[in-house]
Image (cartoon, rainbow, N blue to C red; front, side, top):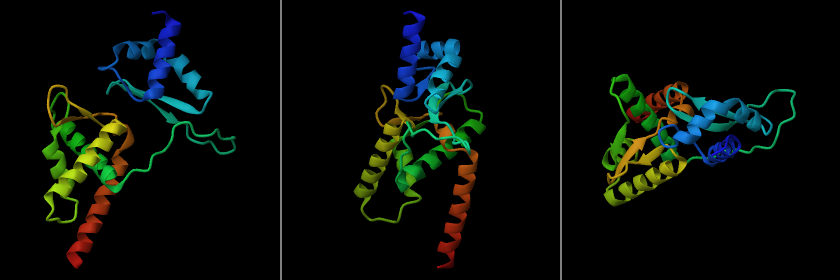
Length: 191
């Protein structure tokens, strides 16, 4: 494959979503070799290339608006997330942080049951177990669709927490979430 073709393929793969080093080695190599050209390409349309060498992923994000500059239309759409998806993303990010600080090597893999239990803690008490599990399954499916969870090959109902989550749910978001949970716990205790 010539360099121009490889560069075009890398640009297209980035436009399709997150590029992981472990899943797409040829695109990753192209980004290593021609990252400046790819950055320049996307900069002309107001999009920034982010490459995390340590975690092994690359993705596109809208360039922040600069005061006094004319803004371009948004190419990368913002998505409104449901409460359950937002909650799951924060809970998964917290688990990923705990996993990393424990010194464990490898990937964080959770079973469907573990994810259901994570969500159950923050759901209203319900006598309808099937409804609770069905809602958790829909939340898992949406999180997979967004690219934050990936099915583990050859393992049924096992999900890998993708490290790209760290780019979307940062430490400040986790701290804000913990504060809101403390407020909520205080309100419930006062009732």
